[in-house]
Length: 114
Length: 111
Image 1: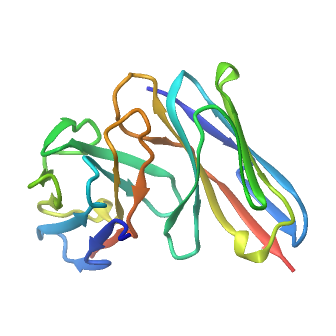
Image 2: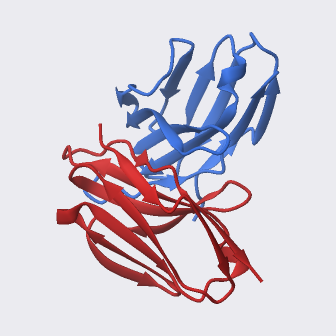
């Protein structure tokens, strides 16, 4: 079946502009996660959705970052007034909301802020 | 929060050699996953293994939850095994939540 998909695959933007990143989870997966990976580093958690609500937003680095999910499906991560330190790969994952919560990752969006 | 340490940070092997990667974690876990990040950045699921032992081809993994560590074994390594191996854990809160990643082991397999 189809895996997690993300778009765009690459995004280059100028400092100060807003960007929107999209994630399509695996069909039927109730849980959706956003992570960030800076160059040469591990993944940092940003936000987790259970259905359309976000019980854990603890990883969002500032109020410039927001995310929403609709229809228990697609999610968008929005970064306002982008800064150079926002440059990273943004990865989305999805999983079943159960005791067996294996997470499956999309290919990521590489964001470069000039 | 829960801490995850991986060792070694870097590993160079000749094709055909075996290796063991280690993951230590600081608290009880509901979920532990091993991933391979290929040179194109894609995270590939290797094992979902909060406890016990699993094998998949040349790869196997063991998690000893009571001692808070997991091991990933790679046998007869191939050049396609190159990349970064991540261990990630979900803390034992009883509800589905985030994965905390280690900093990874960078593996290079040479001919």
